[in-house]
Amino acid sequence: MNVTILVVEDEKEIADTLTYALASEGFNPIWVANGESALNTLNEQTVDLCILDVGLPDANGFELLKAIRRADISNSDVPIMFLTARAEEIDRIIGLEIGADDYVCKPFSPREVVARVKVILKRLEKQTATKTQNELGEFKHKPDQRMIAYQSTPIELTRAEYELLAAFLARPGQVFSRRQLIEKIWSTNHPSDDRAIDTHIKTLRAKLKTQNPHKEFIITHRGFGYSLET
Ligand code: CA
Image 1: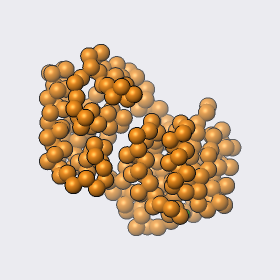
Image 2: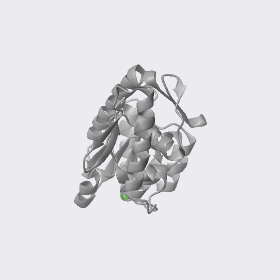
Image 3: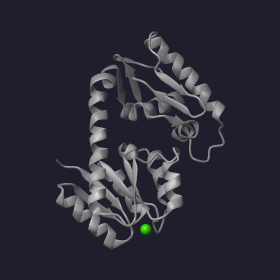
Image 4: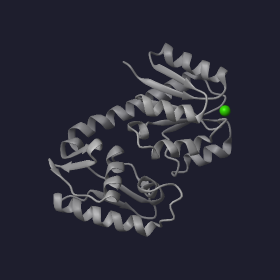
């Protein structure tokens, strides 16, 4: 087992406790103390999970998470577990818009953190297993060529449609809000409204329909957003 876990935490004592607990369970922990180093590390090497303190010296953990998700790197969909010390932060994490996989409140027991890390990794393992059977069987995504094929036939996609489908395929079944999808295509502060997303979804849906007329790939979640069924 060689599972790399990035610990982003500016308090050395907490980081030490965590990395020690993770290493003694056979994980390969890397510690960085700020957001910039976190992004650099994610850009340079494969990371299987990221434990992210919300209060960092150079960045807010929430902003950092958005930056990671937006980044054009293979780690941009790394699972994230937040460390938080404040109740109002928990509200934001639980609110669907953040897109974290879990959170732990300070003070925490390192054992609890390790246990939760294992749960997340197990969940992902299952997702990956499903992926290779069903979804990658039908869809093939080659990010370096920006190409997505269905049953070996490349689908002709606009840039926006490609970004949307790639985002869906990275997290099958996950419901994305329109705002999240806008960020996938453009950026956080893009003035584009929800209707722009609906238009791209409509054209993407039509293209997927021509691949397989009997299947509804994109599911609409009323009042919230969309997910992909594979
Ligand atoms: Ca902190």
